[in-house]
Image 1 (cartoon, one colour):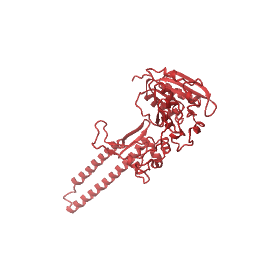
Image 2 (tube, helix red, strand yellow):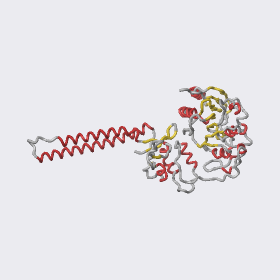
Image 3 (cartoon, one colour):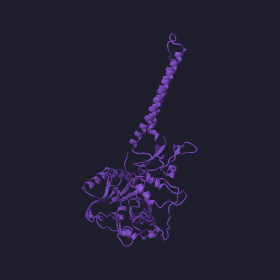
Image 4 (cartoon, one colour):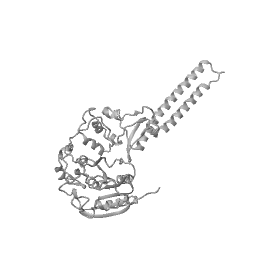
Length: 423
């Protein structure tokens, strides 16, 4: 029945489809074999009264018995086939996913090749226990098969189509991770890149980033727009407020970076910035010899390339994806309003547990100017945070003019310390 890959709450999982169905099917097949043998035993051991039946009648009777057995076997095989289909439907309902049907005529040949199962040449691996290599794709890719086929249609060993925006559209639809491709990504000459740390606060040239698929074609255009609550003029590293963030407070919700770092137990060495805009948090903290990975997507702007041009580490990943880090590794996690994925409380809860997973005991979770749309939102977030038992080192709820609406809105800023949990 094959192997599939499934993207669930904690990322992408590989497993055998047969695992759920196999036990029930094996029991049913065993029952059919036993039943068939009983019928056969009955047919060939029972005989009519030899005092009243002649040889011809015995042959006719045996023929009828054989016909009856054949009919029963056919019926059993039909029941097995029907049961397998029912169990497959049950499996799909339990798991909540559908597989990509590779037999469709419009499926790209490269997608079929990528999703093939590859048997290990030496059989079962003694360390991992696996017998074959299975490609990983997000389970919601099945919902966007036409777009996925378009993405996987290209000339092998040639330049890839200029379709990064198509790939991002698939990611935003839950098709993550995307399948790998056998073509060369479009490259742009990165002339004029500065060495680190001079690169942190110098303007980035319009010529060294990709503008295809974007409304703006230069950084001046982007700086004139309100892209998000975390990015209004965030690509202007010289004239605007961006180069003052984290070192100069505009209101009581703005914590100074040095004050927060002083709260760190055991020192702050590595961190993770969620929805980090143009990377200014990572840049400012890099000046304190702290390495930060910045999570971003290129929504309306070339965030990833801009962050990389500053000599920082962009992680191209949606917040629906499980963070690709091991448990308890970060000293600091920084997040702002981008943490509120789609405004869904269930998504925020799953995301908070993943943040807690990657943050070490004693590490700091810095919630920076989280936008509270109403009192209920504020109470729900407070209740969620309190479930984790974090120590509140800083906690400020205050109003300020919203940079998107211009109205006075409520924001929450907090610095929380993860406790040591003893199981």
